[in-house]
Length: 197
Image (cartoon, rainbow, N blue to C red; front, side):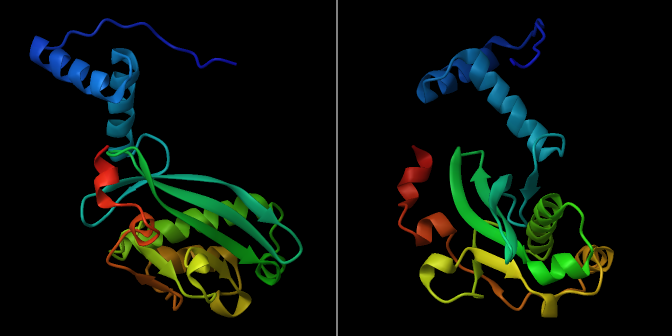
């Protein structure tokens, strides 16, 4: 089903129209598509768009997520950290919850709760001054696991509500997270020059 659209008449100074047209041409997009993207980025940065965070360094990140794994051991989501300014994916994390926590918390919808916990964690790291594209999780050995974080029962309080309260008041400590100097995509080989293409 197509998204509902509205036709509007927009009056802008000619100089702005020319700049927007040049940007659209450079990206190989139509004027309308480019203008919609500019509006979407503005809405994200003002808190009205898709899930997004602004880092302490002023970078805007959009968080996309999708279910990754749901089995007897864990329920995990994949989180894609995009930088809309460059239209690039900067990091990819797997964040999940171990089955014992879900049982102890008496969670009815484990998939939805796991998603909310992952988003709450990313916002928690961001509030603590960590750029969400530079996180390194050292819970599991090996460079291929630096983006994998599975909460286990010894790390969390007795209820989900208590855990969310601890995240909101910054009283929970994650001993498995650090921040690298480089974003994850740079650590894995993307040249910095590729950001500006």
